[in-house]
Length: 210
View 1: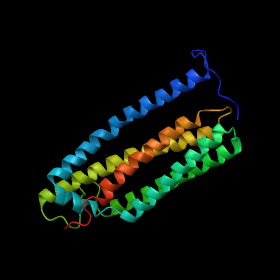
View 2: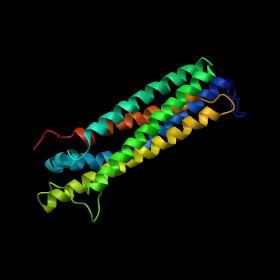
View 3: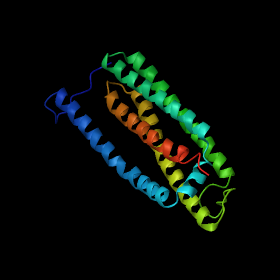
View 4: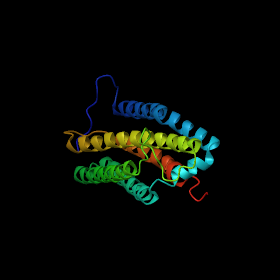
């Protein structure tokens, strides 16, 4: 694997690597601006409508959510191995691990798409057709609809980020020269952490409640 080209604005490779890493951390911090308002909205809903939040959460498919969590954690492990292989200048192993990481990302998106399809069929998409099977009154149905509004917004935004991560992995596989695999790895792990936060909030919240 060839060493990355030193850009003219940098003194040496160490300075270039630091600038790239720092820039990625700044970028990931800015990404919190996308998810932060959704999380605050969720916390407000849970504090003011805990029963309806629990009822809505029980409509999510915990099995598929758990399987997807395992898929994404495995993909992060593969990405970490890809970064290690890249540091060792093992191009072939790096490409294989990136391909496996991307494949697991696609598997996650496919499972999530199937889950969304199920929820559309159960009339759980917010809007005029929203009609949960256990809606007790208008206020409860409204709160449940807000939950699914946050659910589809958060999981849709997460899926978009994961799609970008898969695209980055495919780009790295075809890159003609050495590229900073660790930067894409940081992005991938960020997407993983976001899902680790979303999973208990959306799938496990008050699930055993009445």
